[in-house]
Image 1 (cartoon, rainbow over the protein chains, first blue to last red):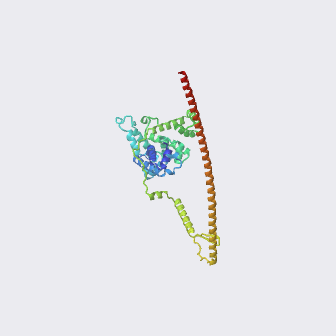
Image 2: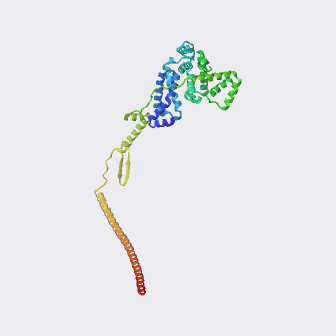
Image 3: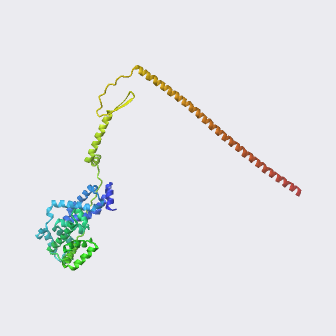
Amino acid sequence: MNDEFLIQKYLAGDVGAFNTLVWRWEKPIFNFILRYIGDADLSKDVMQQTFIRSYRSLKKLKDHRKFSTWLFQIALNLCRDELKRNRHTMLPIDEARCESDSERQVKTVLTADPREHPGALTESNDLALLLKQALQQIPEEQRVVIIMKQYHGLKFTEIADILKEPLNTIKSRMYYGLTALRKVLEQWGLDREDLGYEV
Amino acid sequence: MKCEDYKMLMLDALYDEIGAEDQTGLEQHLGSCAECAAEFAHLKATAGVLEQWPDVDPKVNLTFVQERQSAWGGIRGKLNPGRIMAGLGIACASFLLLLSLAKTRIQVQDGRFSLEMGLFGKTQQPAANYATADDIEALRNENIALVSQLMEEYSRKNKVETVMLLNEMNKEIEQNRGQDMKLVSRSLEQLHYGANQRQDRTDQALGALIKYVNYKQQGQ
């Protein structure tokens, strides 16, 4: 059953169909929010709000084929609202040069005792933590494009549709976002041996 | 194309959104421009690093259930300003229509029909007493004459219908009797024919028997 069929069933009064949509999309939406705002507990709250809002306003969605992009749009709006309330979670890229919590955390991972952590960043949790911190260092408008493209496989045109920006602007943000991310990782002293990739 | 233009194509290539023609152009450019080739390698590497952050399970059980709604809640949910205004409009129009119907006056006077309708009606005027006793008597006699004529016509019509009905019944009986007689006659003919045949067969059998007896007697 595709999303469109489930939406029609839900609009006809079948709440179970909406639950199927939730089970199908909760993981991608949660991970999108987590990568965007970086806090797991807060991400769960925002995810729940996303689905509650979509539950209440799904009948307003005209093109049912755009359900997933619409869902990402709701999640993004809620994330932005959340960030406005908790501005401290987002740092401008220039501040990353200071001795921030993020940098201290990265250094802790990198300077860990090799006997306890052979191969430095072999633990996927460590790498996830570093990437989470690194993404928080780049501008929000670039971060959201990178997350949507890199982790959710949305096409550039779909991202442009969600963010309501021209296609070239989206590609430009993607390009400069990846470049900025590389610089952050380089500032933290991560090289190919740490990551297993040529950075 | 300038190097700047190829940056967007690099992204398309990185995420498999590039067309064949652009792909060829990009490869040719990367083969001749070391700076862009290095940039493309960096982009690929950074994207590769990002892939190392796997999805995690939210571990939540988010389930929606059907909202229980009171009768008033159900009605209220269907109401919106447009519907409320439309409803009020219909109610007002219905009220005015009922009011105008309640004030309707139909009058037949001197063989003329008149209809009066209005929201607030007209002041009721006392009806003038034009009919005299002679007029009433004449009307009564006229009515009696009409009724008598009607009854006569009715009686005459009944008589004609009864005679016609009797004639039809008589005709039908005659037809049935003729058909019955034909059937009886045909049955009698069949009986007669059957009896003759049986008699012939008996005669033949007796003749044969007599011949046989004579033959036996001659043999002895």
